[in-house]
Image (cartoon, rainbow, N blue to C red; front, side):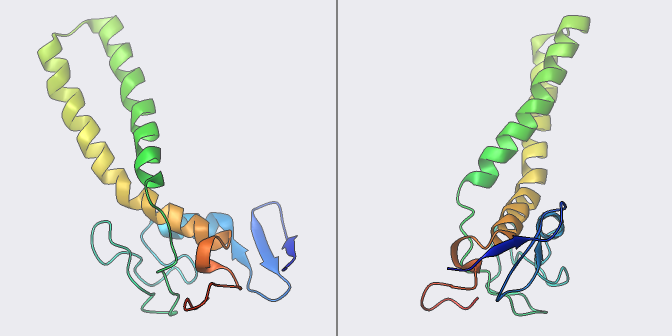
Length: 145
């Protein structure tokens, strides 16, 4: 079993046998659609399809297991923006319901689509930084670390 050693208060972690993985930089790199290790290679080959490996550093992305977490996080984020805005506008101005629907429905759809890929990238970056699934030093058989 490997020993995790916290190296600073910024979220950096390293192991006795592994590389240093900074949580915040890997989250930001993933959010920007870049490889969480080098920050240069592309993370996605299509809108929500994670590439098999980084074209620059060769990091294997296949062990990621983002599943439904990005969608749930996007729902929470968009909901916390749209719902208070709608309530504020409704209580202060009382516009017609048709106008509200014409504004809030497209706004919700566009914000959700705009955030889905960056949030999924951040989840993959989080998994890499915390050595979750096959991103650790002791990857399952058949998966390269």
